[in-house]
Length: 202
Image 1: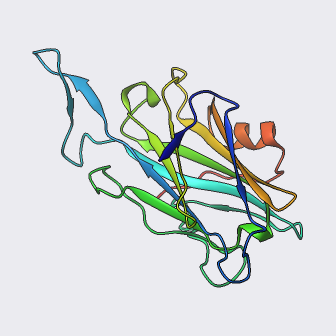
Image 2: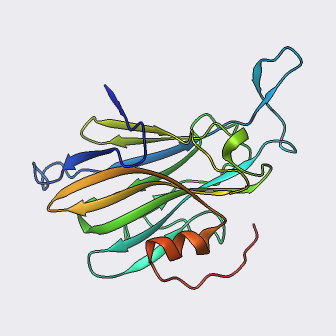
């Protein structure tokens, strides 16, 4: 059964305290998208071809329980790590949206995190999320699945804070945010991570 977070503020909690040593909980985060346009017949169709497909990036800003902070995203080639801190790993940069499995991020030690802000960023190919059918799945190793759509976009804003994951009293809370910003810096100022940003290119 898939749990859908319909609107901003909807959340789902996952208990980390049960059998944590024997079966530690892991979180798989998947971003998938496709650009759509109206064909002559008025139908919605996927736009194929690397020249026309938007390039969306899955990324996160994180803060660990020990105070460590960082950013994981394809821009700047910061893919994280599976076996060392922060135990958060991004598998690839899907430049076209054609890959069936999109982009995937894994939290291998959610017990060590304080908060993780997951975002989708349009690097190129679209002005905003109005023409991009973006959706995010959270697949938990205990069998739970949580799903949300980026279905209420702001015009001319290419950065979406999709979800917030918080560790509260041995529970992981997944919250649908879906807040739109002009870019990384504006989102950081709102959520107060305190990073120093500079312009980057792939």
